[in-house]
Image (tube, rainbow, N blue to C red; front, side, top):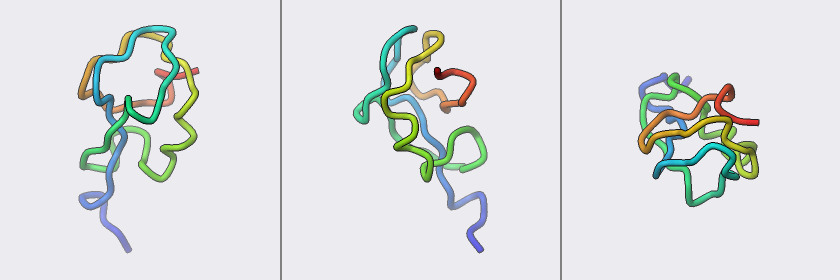
Length: 66
């Protein structure tokens, strides 16, 4: 079993503006894995639209995306 410490969550690699489509180069990953969208769901994020400005380094949440 993998602990939460070794899992990772998606973060904004740079600031993302409201209405901007999420591209692969916009996201990175950081530990821990319980702070937002898991890396295992990363490809589901690509192509979604930001509902508000997302600051660089923020853990991505499904509520931030449409």
